[in-house]
Image (cartoon, rainbow, N blue to C red; front, side, top):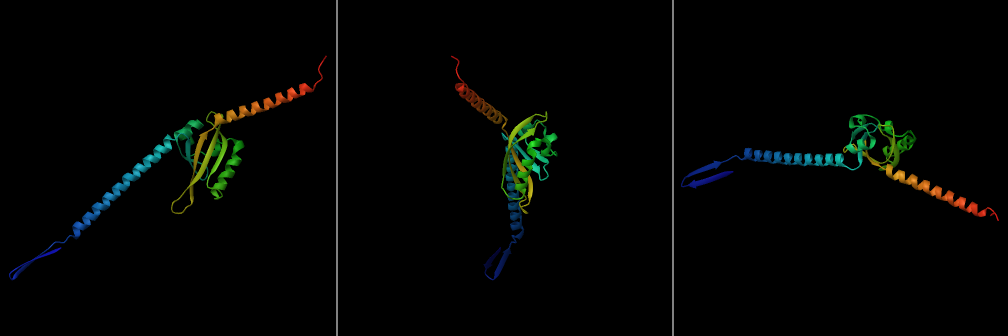
Amino acid sequence: VVFGLQTGQHSAVVATDLTEQKRQAENLLQTRLRLEQEIMLRESEERFRSTFEQAAVGIAHVDLDGNYLRVNQRTCDITGYSREELIGHNYRDITHPDDLQEDAALRARLLAGETGGIRLEKRLLRADGSPIWVQVTGSLAYDPDTHAPQYFISVIEDISERKALELENERLYYAARAAERTKRASRRLPRKL
């Protein structure tokens, strides 16, 4: 900025270089924006952690080879394993042998891009060896730059009570059908006089 002053035959010019002040103001603005972004990122990460940990369903991140990367507490509650026991172990180790083939086929379809998500009902083997019915809904997390799959996201819901009710309903249905057949057959028998 240049200011000029003329009086009579003398003139004076005062110049102030604001380049340094402008640079400092820009640096201050950039620092403020960076701090605001860091705060927003921390808040977003905290919301994710809270959602992951406090969900009413099991949530697991599983690498492409099937090894658990991260699990929430509900996954531990469902399986009976601690977080330390699950992390690094393969989901196949706790999947009932009769359900492995369907599970692997669905994951292969997901990896091949044939579907955007999977859902299956299967049995897991709890830490005590007992089976538990779960519904697993899965999708893939992709690298934002390369769009290559990075890991599976699995949502695990305990459906053992529903399965028990389904089995009981099926048992009652067949028992009623058997009773009806017996009743019809007894009507056809000759009556004693």
